[in-house]
Image 1 (tube, rainbow, N blue to C red):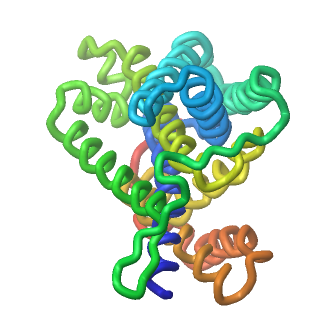
Image 2 (image 1 turned 180 degrees about the vertical axis):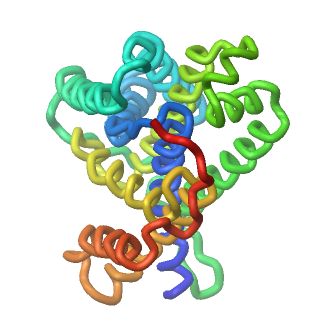
Length: 290
């Protein structure tokens, strides 16, 4: 039973980690919090289930990739059309713009797909994998495996790929990068698009576990933000560890205490970290913020 609970907690923690990573990349590059991150998850889940799977009858893999591509493009468009025009203004203005984007995505999903929840069993149909005396959800194992693969690819991309190095340089110092001829606005659009893809992947992976509704991403987005605070504001490894810790604490608390306190446990954990270790598990590197 403990192993089964831990795997379930890690699976949910992977979802939080993907959302938290999106917050981290946008914060490090743009110095703003993207409060539309949860709504990107919601819209991606609808797009994946209602459009690509149910309407177009695409395979799981193709629908997965198509959803990521569409949401990434949507994030890039927002960055180029809206954020680029607001970059020289107060960060608060850009943050308010992300709130508006979130409302647009949520209400857009309601208008396009209707208010009724969608049920999607996923390619595994809720099947359980029995290993010895332990019964594990195949979807939970897929979530963990896909997240690990994304993290490995991400680490290699930012360490070795030319575009990844440019993105790191822009995140470190936009002004110097621009003086060296790097197209900063274009790089920021790629960063926002990547953060949107992370949220979209979280939505696709989460869809078989819950009903797809217009509210599904709101709380998950908040908990992704909590995971970033726990791990350390702006820390990539912190977002991952914070998400996994949050998911595990939630699952164990639900089993040993009560499911009624599931959400309360997440925010109680955040309050404890803010009180006892406000810098989080990993302290953010000292950088100048506007």
